[in-house]
Structure formats: C-alpha cells, structure tokens
Image 1 (tube, one colour):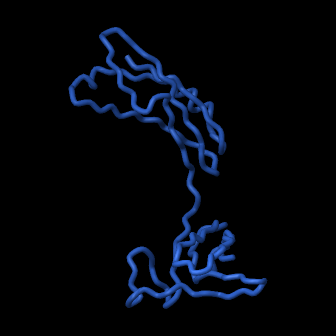
Image 2 (tube, rainbow, N blue to C red):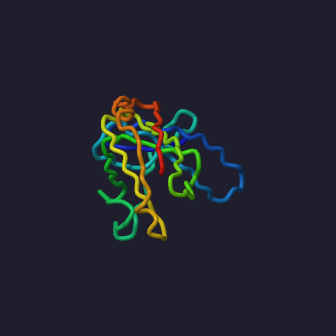
Image 3 (spheres, rainbow, N blue to C red):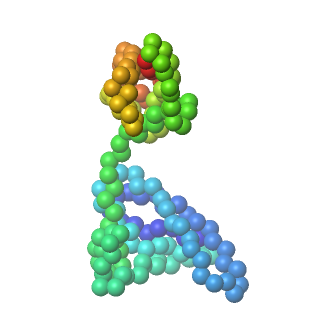
Length: 169
C-alpha cells in the first residue's frame, strides 16, 4: 500500500492498495488525505508498505528546485498552506436558467433554495440578484422576496436548507 508522508499540520493520509501486474508499464496512483487543522503542511513523499515493512520514499526534486505549482522547501518536499474552513452555500432554482417573458402586469413566483453544503454553520446571508439582458427591459423588472424568511433560518446548520419565494413582476 501507499500513503502520503507529511509534516507540519496534523494530517490523515488515505492508504491506497496497489496491485502491479507483471510486465506492466508505468501508471499513476493518486495519493490523498485530510488535513485536520490549518497551517503549513509539508509533503515529504510517500510510505510504501510491503509485507508489513515500511519504505519511506522522498518526492523527486524539480530542476533547479523551481516549480510554479508549489513552493519548494528543500530538495525533496513542498509546503502547502491549509486555510481555515469557510462556510459553503449552494443556491438552487428549479431550472438551470430562468428565462421569462412577462407582459405588463404579469408576475411569476420562483422558489430559490439555499443549502449549507459545508461543515460550518452560516450566520449571515444577504441575497443579492443581478439581472442581465441585452435590452433595457431589465430596468422595468421588480424582484421581491421576504428577508424575514432568511433571517429566521439563520444560523443555517451544515446539511440544512431553506427556500424563499422570489416574485418577479
């Protein structure tokens, strides 16, 4: 099996089991894991485990220790800055693209859903909607929604959602 060898922040490496067929050519193996805190994570190489014996393997160096995808710390490792977790919100509407043609005096209501897809609660949410059009008719469109529904749904806990009716006239 293979797993990442790291230093710095606490990190849980996913172990990958690999079977290499005889006479096989090179193939890629993706190594991953989960940092448990924020800070600097040093990727040093990987651990190869064969018959309960561990072999540490350092990552190869890039020419002149220059690589644009990461900052090289020394000849055989790189640093990755792990940032603090941030709230993640997904906004959903029943249709991929809202395309409406309304005549004067007509209105339509669409449900807009807000889903907390992250791991942190969301304490503040201020919805803004921007209309785009190739004509000047966007200036005549009026959007209405009830902000009290938004306020009463906060904090929005992970995995939870709420919907507000959006009135377009």
